[in-house]
Image (tube, rainbow, N blue to C red):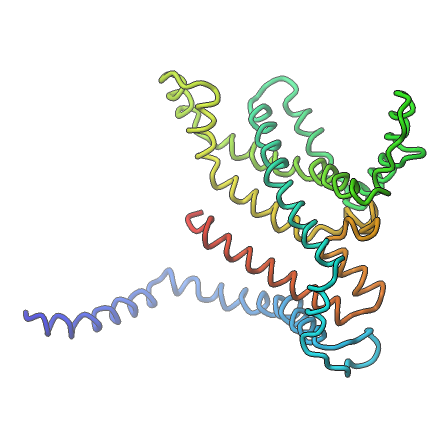
Length: 312
């Protein structure tokens, strides 16, 4: 057979293989399932995701207060106003701080506690429950509780300061300290969720591998660094993903805690959207914030999946 003949027959063989694959029983068996379940899912996704985002993109091109039909077309002026707005810049920085805090403090803390509580030791289940309880608590309730804790007149901080005879710090009223108070609550609230993820991952690690490393003379840190952590790779990646996306969407915890204040010091993109787009009835500006947030989340989600989770 000449090379020209082989080249001519290769596409035919490829087409025949595809036809055989499409006619296979496995594909024919999946086809009714796809036809039954895919259209409702696409309909719901279109109604509750695509259409609202399309409307938000459309409204972001108008100066509109939410009453009547939008008529005052201003193009990309809302986006220009946002990126020149100090409060929105502060919100972007705060979202970045929350992400960094989650990655550098919250997740390492969760891994450390998970390594201690993953084994069947006395009291492990009780401590897991204690550390996981903050995550179960509603975000609004957690914000209200910590607002009382930070209260400089009647809260826990006031009681501790009075006991030691020092001046009570009004943490939530200080624009330089309020964001750090929020970060502390974020760590307290969500590290239990990540801890449970890591506990599940650690329980799936093959104990024989760890025993082999111990026989070879590996120390506890070496076993964790070269055996446990690589085997937890997929769990770490999904935990980081949840931390990033959750940090970008943080809202329920901040509103009862600080309301975005003082002086916009604790605004995030979502609280900024609510404050300026809903309560102040600047719907066009709020829609522009929603578009920016959507683009950031989608870009991060697909980029992260493409780069870090392509083998998971």
